[in-house]
Amino acid sequence: AVVSTQSGHYGRGRENVAFCPYDCPEPTVYLPDGATPVPTCLNRDPEKTGTVAGCFCPEGQFLQDGLCVEASGCKCLYEGHIYDNGETIKKKKVPTATLR
Image 1 (cartoon, rainbow, N blue to C red):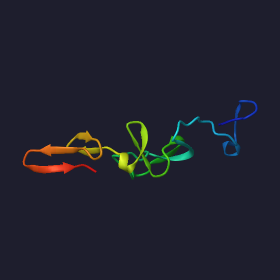
Image 2 (cartoon, rainbow, N blue to C red):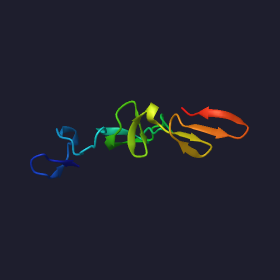
Image 3 (cartoon, helix red, strand yellow):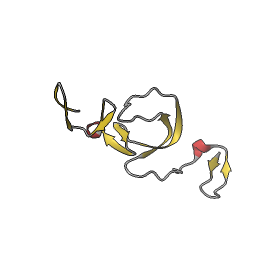
Image 4 (tube, helix red, strand yellow):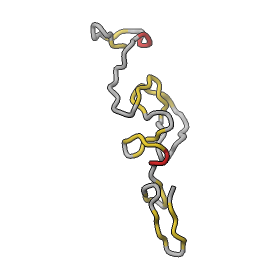
């Protein structure tokens, strides 16, 4: 189904519509056939299972806590806990580690 820009009626021929039916918040972009699932910080290259129209993070950015971030802004998952990128953790019997 398609929304006509003049009448607001639904019809066939969506590929001919010259407007974007989505108001995507910055910095997301509208894609008529965005891959699902979407790349996230915890899974940057998920196996594509389908496509859907909608608002997506720009190329090279990943979904983290509902926001689009560069890889350097991704948080780290370590032993079941989420840490900020660059956060230092101290573990018993293990040298101090900085997460990246």
